[in-house]
Length: 152
Image 1 (cartoon, rainbow, N blue to C red):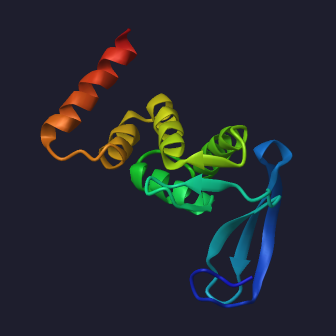
Image 2 (image 1 turned 180 degrees about the horizontal axis):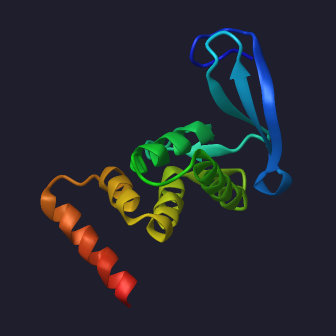
């Protein structure tokens, strides 16, 4: 394995833990070259699972796209990478229950559902892209909807 910071291949494992209810191993690694630390996860490779795009095309599910979208929504918010990884695992597990395929809409709705329950700011950020907000009133409408649901 190479260090993501300096690309040095002299990397050692500092700590290993079983996570995600035994479905993954989290490893803290240290680079002997630049001395920085980073985290890796090992997971069982699941059977191929396809995503049906809005255009009708199909492509393999790419967990990193979900992580990137959620990470962007939660930027500068009080969330750990482990929280994000657990959330994406939960979403991925729910999607796999639907069969061999799912739509990008299903993925987006599950992400929105998780964000709404866990971080309203992240929810609004993700919703603005997912729902294609074009003006300030789109944000206002979504915020009002969020307040009404939390009150009732």
